Image 1 (cartoon, one colour):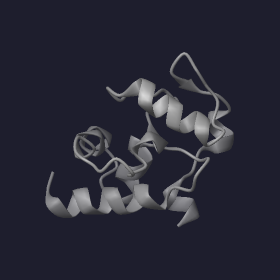
Image 2 (cartoon, rainbow, N blue to C red):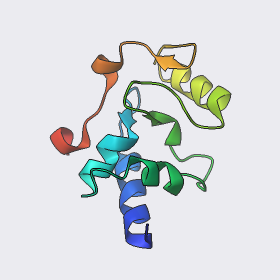
Image 3 (cartoon, helix red, strand yellow):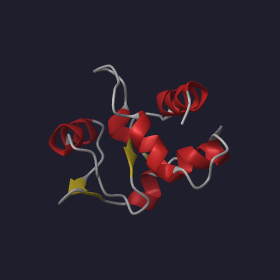
Image 4 (cartoon, rainbow, N blue to C red):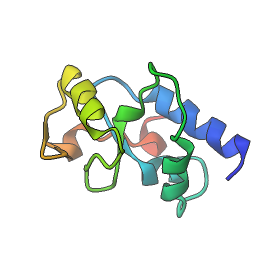
Length: 101
């Protein structure tokens, strides 16, 4: 995608509250590209250590990032339970940017 897409993706991710998660697809929809969830993941290939990329998962609540162990640790620190790479109570902690922004 382009720099504007990436900028919008990062802006939305920075708005995800602690203790909540969203999906690549929800972010793609929020920036106006509903079929580009994979591009959201590609945008997340380079970010600062304090960036909350750990709050983004796939549509079924699975952590699919290559740094899965690190993400799970960060999610647990925010009281989000993860078992075998899947966020527990996903529907309860899901943050939909289209509804909550």
